[in-house]
Every structure is written in C-alpha cells, then in structure tokens.
Length: 144
Image (tube, rainbow, N blue to C red; front, side, top):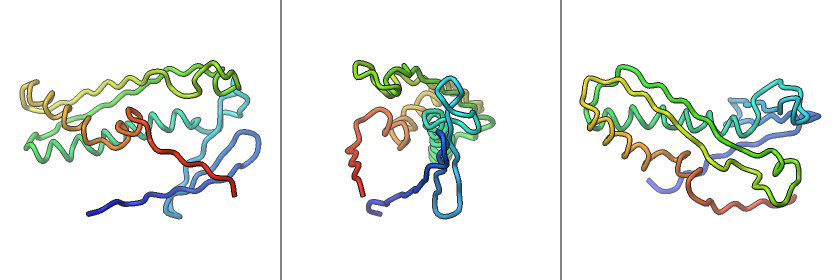
C-alpha cells in the first residue's frame, strides 16, 4: 500500500468558534475558553491534538497487542501538554505550540511488565499522531 491522503475542511463560525468536517460525515467543533477570548462551547484545537494522540494510541495499542498475542483487559490513556498562551496572543519570543506533551498509559493484561514495555516501544514507533508531534512535518499553508 502506498501513501494515503487524509483530508479535513473547516470554517469559522464567528468569534473564536471553528467547525471542522471530516469525510463529509464527522464534525469537530472547536472554541477557546473565556480566558483566551472564546465562549467555551467546545474543546480548543490544542486539546483536540491531545485527544487525537489518545485516539491514535488507543487504536495502535490493540493492533500491536493482537500481533504480539497479548490479550488486553483494559487500556487507559491520559495526556497533558504545557503551552504558554503568550505565543498564541502574539509574543514573537514565545513558541505558539506545546513545549512538552506527557502521556501516561495504563495497560492491564495477563502478561509480565517486560512484554507490556516491548508492546509500548512498538506502539510509540508506529503511532502516526505521536510521530507528527515528535518530528517536524513539512507544512505548506497557501492563501486562496
């Protein structure tokens, strides 16, 4: 299988609200909390990134566990990231994105911890969202 192209499109809904559509089937709404000028009607985009990381890990973990014959009983994933909002607010000396993202994964399976650690090494290598966060991506923004 070669490259696959994923797409999303979106539009501004007023104030700081944005709607993203995926496959003409799914909608993700985003907003900002009042402290950043929004109305707090939906998660903000950087929270959606954390949720995407949870989603990706939550998919890759069972895929790799099945390959390694590890019967999962439970998986819990918690994410958090540190971001200085001054970058978003216009300070050119402050990065706009996360400085650090932390993930805690709890896996319950009837195998020893070494097998779970091996599983997680493979998951980290294969999770597309963690790869996007860890490594620079060739981003091209064009004005129409």
